[in-house]
Image (cartoon, rainbow, N blue to C red; front, side, top):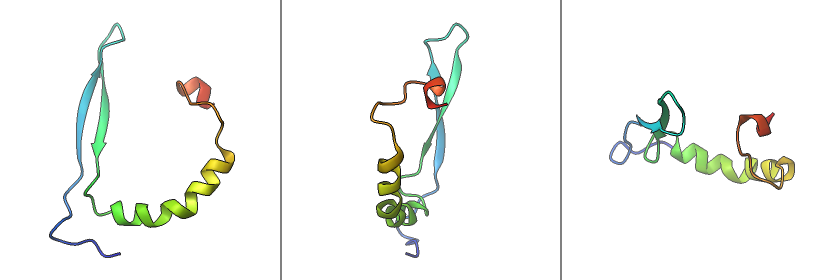
Length: 68
Protein backbone atom coordinates (compact mmCIF):
# COMPACT_ATOMS: atom_id res chain seq x y z
CA UNK A 1 0.00 0.00 0.00
CA UNK A 2 3.05 2.28 0.07
CA UNK A 3 3.07 4.55 -3.02
CA UNK A 4 5.87 3.97 -5.50
CA UNK A 5 8.18 6.95 -5.94
CA UNK A 6 8.56 6.01 -9.61
CA UNK A 7 4.88 6.21 -10.53
CA UNK A 8 3.33 8.73 -8.11
CA UNK A 9 2.62 12.20 -9.45
CA UNK A 10 1.34 15.27 -7.69
CA UNK A 11 -2.34 15.94 -8.19
CA UNK A 12 -3.07 19.08 -10.16
CA UNK A 13 -6.06 21.32 -10.54
CA UNK A 14 -7.36 23.00 -13.66
CA UNK A 15 -10.51 24.97 -14.39
CA UNK A 16 -13.30 24.66 -16.94
CA UNK A 17 -15.53 27.68 -17.54
CA UNK A 18 -19.25 27.36 -16.86
CA UNK A 19 -20.53 29.02 -20.03
CA UNK A 20 -24.21 28.30 -19.36
CA UNK A 21 -24.43 31.12 -16.80
CA UNK A 22 -24.72 34.87 -17.43
CA UNK A 23 -21.57 35.55 -15.46
CA UNK A 24 -18.93 33.01 -16.47
CA UNK A 25 -17.56 31.20 -13.44
CA UNK A 26 -14.97 28.45 -13.23
CA UNK A 27 -15.43 24.82 -12.23
CA UNK A 28 -12.40 23.32 -10.47
CA UNK A 29 -11.27 19.90 -11.73
CA UNK A 30 -8.75 17.80 -9.79
CA UNK A 31 -6.63 15.23 -11.61
CA UNK A 32 -5.62 12.61 -9.03
CA UNK A 33 -5.29 9.45 -11.15
CA UNK A 34 -1.60 8.91 -10.27
CA UNK A 35 -1.71 10.57 -6.84
CA UNK A 36 -0.47 8.94 -3.64
CA UNK A 37 -4.05 8.33 -2.46
CA UNK A 38 -5.10 6.24 -5.49
CA UNK A 39 -4.10 2.90 -3.95
CA UNK A 40 -5.94 3.50 -0.68
CA UNK A 41 -9.01 4.56 -2.68
CA UNK A 42 -8.93 1.32 -4.65
CA UNK A 43 -8.50 -0.63 -1.42
CA UNK A 44 -11.46 1.05 0.33
CA UNK A 45 -13.84 1.03 -2.64
CA UNK A 46 -15.04 -2.61 -2.25
CA UNK A 47 -15.92 -1.91 1.39
CA UNK A 48 -17.67 1.42 0.83
CA UNK A 49 -19.36 0.67 -2.52
CA UNK A 50 -22.00 -1.75 -1.08
CA UNK A 51 -23.05 0.85 1.50
CA UNK A 52 -23.35 3.51 -1.18
CA UNK A 53 -25.33 1.22 -3.48
CA UNK A 54 -27.66 0.26 -0.63
CA UNK A 55 -28.45 3.89 0.28
CA UNK A 56 -28.18 5.62 -3.10
CA UNK A 57 -31.29 6.67 -4.94
CA UNK A 58 -32.18 4.92 -8.17
CA UNK A 59 -32.32 8.19 -10.11
CA UNK A 60 -29.31 10.42 -10.81
CA UNK A 61 -28.58 13.67 -8.99
CA UNK A 62 -29.28 16.53 -11.39
CA UNK A 63 -28.11 19.44 -9.27
CA UNK A 64 -27.52 20.48 -5.66
CA UNK A 65 -31.23 20.92 -5.01
CA UNK A 66 -31.92 17.28 -5.84
CA UNK A 67 -29.11 16.19 -3.56
CA UNK A 68 -30.76 17.84 -0.54
